[in-house]
Amino acid sequence: QVQLVESGGGLVQPGGSLRLSCVASGSAISMNVMGWYRQAPGKQREPVATITNIGITNYADSVQGRFTISRDTAKNTVYLQMSSLKPEDTAIYYCNIRGTAMGDIGLRIFDSWGQGTQVTVSS
Image 1 (cartoon, rainbow, N blue to C red):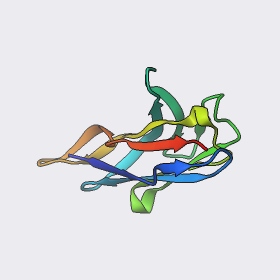
Image 2 (image 1 turned 90 degrees about the vertical axis):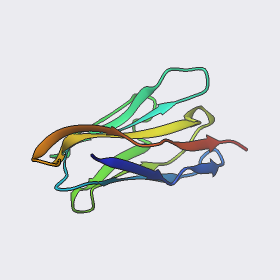
Image 3 (image 1 turned 180 degrees about the horizontal axis):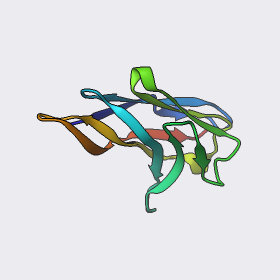
Image 4 (image 1 turned 45 degrees about the horizontal axis):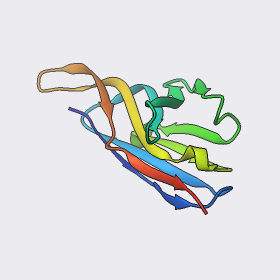
């Protein structure tokens, strides 16, 4: 229905920056709630940041002031700008988008996840 493709992960040094992108593909997509989640080795997946269709954002305390979530509705894309990265930010990052899209016979609700992108912060 709606597929999400993530990009932008990689290896960076502590204090560095990285920008993740998540592009949604489908028909007549309307993104309502978008978010980034991460899962570190041996830990549960946790929310990092969310943004609504009207631009309301929420951040985990651990990333507040360092990460910025944004979206480009015209491009069906969600971004996560990560700055002042720390080793504890190392994780697989997943994007999630909830909204509506055109199905075979009409608009349908979707809740899609990206494939995950590895972010490694290390010297």
